Amino acid sequence: MTLERTVLSPSDIEEMVARVAEELRLTLAEVERPVFVGVMKGAYIWMADLLRALDRDVEMDYIDVSSYVGTASTGRITIQRDVHTDLKGRTVVLLDEVIDTGLTLRYLKDDFIQRGAKRVYVAVAVDKREHPTDGGIRPDFVGAKVPNEFLVGYGMDYEEHFRSLKAVRVLSTSD
Image (cartoon, rainbow, N blue to C red; front, side, top):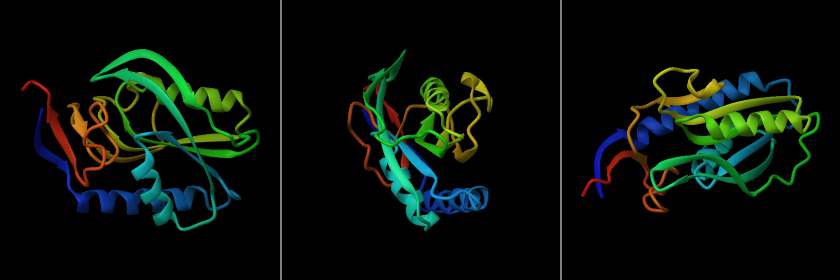
């Protein structure tokens, strides 16, 4: 494994967090105490940065799902830890660090709506897809459009490695 070029520097990340927080602030201005749900483990840094930048009272929860083994999607969603917050009638912001196939976020958005959420917004740190509607879902908030390469850092990992890098980097697994 080799860490290759930097796709997003720490200052790029800081700027995207500030921009998305402002977009969320405007969109949620009339919403009393929205629920932010982070998709773990990857969303934890994005969620913390975004909520601090948003600087308003929100409820937060998280859901732990899996759909990957190594670098490949299995095509199946398995919920490891479900949200504990009642979503019925609530405005939810679903946070994930990356969208690539769209499978997980499409599944979770549909599931939250079925649970009675009034509205579900999707906010991703990075979008790796070629087209904005690939996977049948269009995030409402996107931090950055990035190349469709295997990325690590800022919550993204390779078999639990590199998740805490301060930058987003390309990882080569061909060594």
